[in-house]
Amino acid sequence: MPLFYDQLNRQINLPSVPQRIISVVPSQTELLFYLGLDKEVIGITKFCIHPAGKFKAATKIGGTKQLDLAHIKALRPDLIIANKEENDRSQLEELMQHFPVWISDIYNLEDALDMIEHLGALTGKSSEATALCNAVKENFSTLVPSLSALKTAYFIWRKPYMVAGKNTFIDNMLQKCGLVNVFAAERYPEVSLSEITEARPDVILLSSEPYPFKEKHIAELSAAAPAAIIKLVDGEMFSWYGSRLLKAPGYFQDLINSLHR
View 1 (cartoon, rainbow, N blue to C red):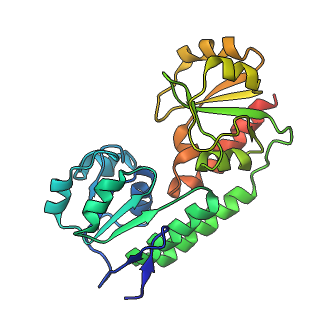
View 2 (view 1 turned 90 degrees about the vertical axis):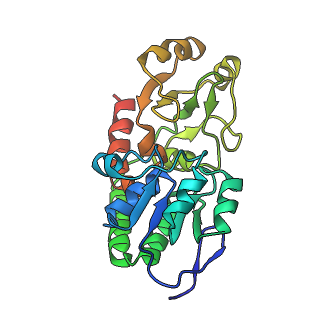
């Protein structure tokens, strides 16, 4: 087997193509099933909800931040696929003592495509991964971004309000849409209603995850930013960086068009 490195530049030792894979990141789980690794995936988290049929049948090993380590060890995986941001570092370090753990670290579309290619190589699905990457690139190449540079706030949480800031995958997707993040802070800062008012966003996007924003939440933000266009959006399209990227450009195009009607 060739030498493999994850996106933290850690060497991963695999004596053979893995046959018992545990994925602890929802978007990467969906990717593995897309690549045809139905038999190889032996454990997923309770948040790995796509594809629905696979989720229902698969063994669950806890949540992304609260993995059931004893259950994972009992399953004896020969590869665990994780993510730096979505999983707990101490839990991953414990698993590293027993199993190969490949960790992604994704901030933009290029990182996501790199992850897809790497997982294809790791799992013996290189041709499928390359075909997927080419299709994703083609779909993004047809995306016509907004030319208005609309100042945008993307909300991921309520009580307290939290937004996706700079240096996040979500921010990179906003950039692909031609939308300008109104908040300059990095990662996921808390923001107050007064800060929202001061920022004067043109657009407010309320994500379906991790907090499930609904129509009833629009009014309170409309009071803080009465001039803003406020829309509920599918958080999976903005934050899932696996095979769902195939669908994202079409979704983004519909969103962009709706902002200019």
